[in-house]
Every structure is written in C-alpha cells, then in structure tokens.
Image (cartoon, rainbow, N blue to C red; front, side):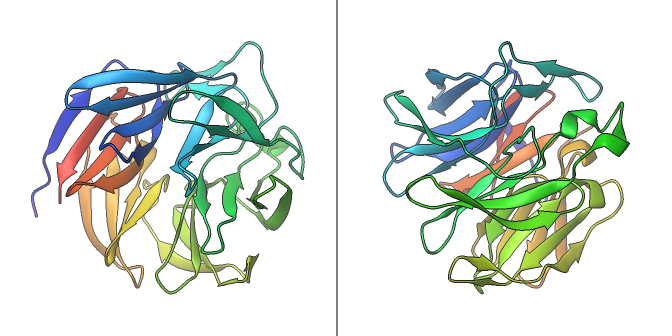
Length: 281
C-alpha cells in the first residue's frame, strides 16, 4: 500500500517513545531537550522537564508514565552527541500525567554507565527494559563498548538481569505467542526470547533485516509488527512469523526512532528532523 506521512509537530530536539494517553493525546520524550511532551488536536504541551535524557516511555496500568532515562546522552545529529549537565546515573523513572516525577528503579546491575533505552510491560506486570550501556564510545572507541543487557524491574523497583546481549539491544515488544522480541540495532536483526513466568529463555534469531536497517522501537498491531529502522530511514512491517510484509520509506535523514498505534494511525517519532508524524493504517 502507499504510505503517506502527516506531520503534526516540528522543531523538537530528538523525540522518541510515543505513547497514546487516555485523553487521546500522543505523549513522547525528547532526549535532547530532556522533556516529556504531549500533542493533541494541534496543541503541544509540556508534561515535565527531566534530569538526564528520557529515552523510552510506556504507560503503566496505574496510569503513570514509565521512562527509561539513559542518564544524559542525546544525538544532536548522526555524527554528534550531546551530554547533559549534570549527568545522572541511568534509571527508570515514573511520571504522573500531572507532571509529578519520581525515581522507580535506580540500582541497576552490570557495567557502568547504564543507559536504559526502551521498555515494555510483561504479561506478569513487570517492566522489562534494554540497557545498551556505554554506547557513547561506539564512534571513537568501539573496543571499549561493554555490550548490552536486558533487565527486568518488579513492582517494587528491584532490578535483575535477564540476559547479556551483543550489539545494541534497543526496542522490544511481546509477541502474541508470549515470547519477547528485541531489536539489536548494530546487528540488523530482531531476536526472540521464550518467556515463562518472568524468565527469558535462550535467545534465537527471529528476523534478519538488510545491513542498512537498524531496528529501533517497535509496536504490535493485530497481526503485524511495526519496527522503526532509525538511520535506515524506514519502518519494517513484519508478520507474526518474522517475514517482511512491507517497508515504509520515511525519507532521507528522517531517522524514525519509535512508534505507537492509536485511533487507526501509526504514530512515529523522527529523531533527526525532530518531528511527530503519523500514517493512516
């Protein structure tokens, strides 16, 4: 089918993590401006300013927004990173829709710095999140990269490690069959973890994409997964078997970072242009 983007917001810093709110707003984080904003019917509002850099976001069953804060790292461009002043340790935060912010999980296992990236609630209600760790060294000192990990936080905010991972673990979503899918950006693939009572089984490759497609955020809609391709400037439409059904071209330099589905539309944050756009489904 022909996919045509409708542009809703421009002039953002580096947006990610779109979330549909109960009032029909689309909320999203902005790494570079360190804010959470929401858009509805042509109006943009700020929910909160945060320390560090909010990277991924989900709406919890308690009506709170859960945010993966990477501690203060944000792309200015594909070649330049901005470092927040001051930096904070990577953590999971919780934000009310009225703007009240609190820390939810701050004690994270693994090598430092931790840089929580994206998150999803498990069927058991725990919060599963990716931590690509010290990815700021990938350009100048790739040999110093720790690799990544997948973590889970229980309802009290206590965190444990689910798996060590190679590459750059990024977006994640649960499959209707109960397994967990995770995009590995640097390896151009989506992997699958069997999931049983809060534990992840052995990792298996689920979908191999071409070498210019870098999986980022993803969302399930019915019998399709939409997987953003960040620097590849595309969104992959995948079947439940991992087969590529379609590719949505988002345009040169668009850098699609994450997506959500609401009101018959696919909502997408475009990182480098600083835009919120949508596509009719």
